[in-house]
Length: 184
Image 1 (tube, rainbow, N blue to C red):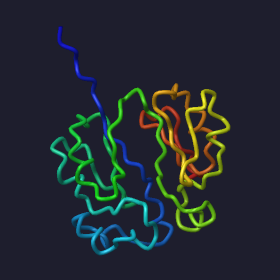
Image 2 (image 1 turned 45 degrees about the vertical axis):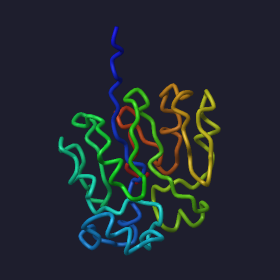
Image 3 (image 1 turned 120 degrees about the vertical axis):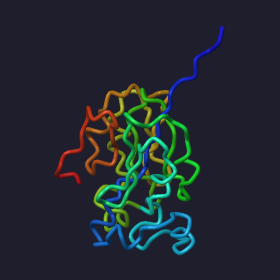
């Protein structure tokens, strides 16, 4: 009997609101992400951990599932993603990862700076406040290196963390638990 391979999908761990906050236009950084990473080895001035917005991931996606948003950040159309992993391989910041669709809750920030610094730079960056960790009924969330990390094996996808997150950092790619407009 052959075991069927489970479908995986890509998620981007950056909401990209730092560029909007600092008035950086996407066109200013457009180009090959590898080249941008070489130009900014410590990250762009607005966020050293975030998406470079160059679109290399969108270029390699054969399914047209990746696009660069108005905020200059890669976004994945889950309905088109086949989980091939090409976007994961090409991201120099390692912000795109593959996950299983049932693990629909994820933190859209991997910034390791302290909360006060993050707050100055990005409207949706994780500030390590711990509200998500305190409200998780199954202890699936921990704050590590100043950002939320979700243990997918423990997570029951209840969405409590996404609802309680004061900055809208924790997302639900199924759209059940949506980010309130005042959070972005």
